[in-house]
Length: 353
Image (cartoon, rainbow, N blue to C red; front, side, top):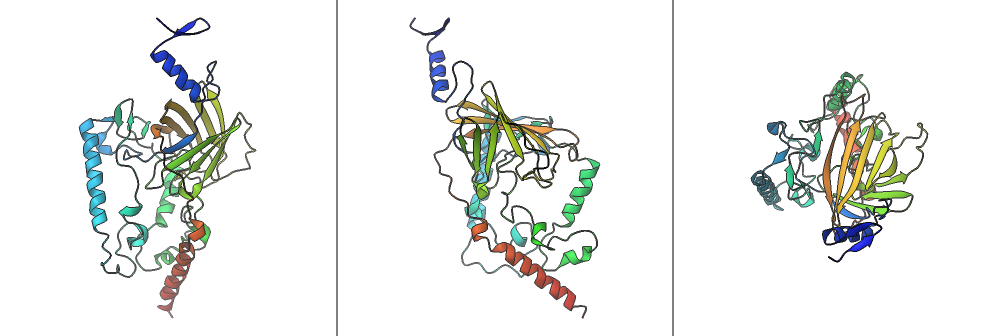
């Protein structure tokens, strides 16, 4: 039998092919010191973050269930696309009261949505959710403190009724339109819609590309949405605790062939909805093959959730390009949001004059 001999080891067939893949992927033959994670990945998937309650503790879908999910999603998108009639009339003043962008006055249609066309597979199995911890695949219960905070946040999120409804809540804290800093971070083009740049990093409704550029002492992950550029410093000391950022302070190191990243020092409003400055995230990046990374994460924030939670999903490589995401540069909406709020307030006050 012919083989490649390294020290006392003899490699042939599959073993030799694996070795060559590791070398070309950037692995160190002597110890996995420098796995190359570079590339562009499309993380869009129909698999939900949290497991639908109907599945209970069931971790996997059958192939038939996964196919039904794909067909149902394709049919729903086709139906929504059919409703984009250029001859349709204008929506009612103030919207129709339904959920969605500005009371569903037409902020988005199917053209913008790119959340994948299939559920993902890991080890040949279709997962029912990205979350695997806790066992039910859903985030754990909120702490008492967090429940109060979430209730206050819900007070400032209501469907568009065409009225200055927030004036009824005067004295209960800052209103949702008191100043621009009360508006959501994504609306202000500071961060993406949800933790697309993380950490942790989740799929979203559209713009799901991630580009990784790797050097000897740092790794940059560019998120397509809002072009957040996240820097992971390798084998570095963390910044002082008083230096806090939207994406936190990410420090990475290699454990075998896996990049392990710990992130702390967040602001009071991280990208992860509901979390606060006590958030701590552990992420693991591992190259599965030439076309796939495995991404897993664990979230801990004892002031918000009663237990840690986490999950895993694959990052498939893509030849697609990451183009600049023009958000704030062309975003005139924020000023108009504030102008609209002032007009509604003036209308409400005029009724008492």
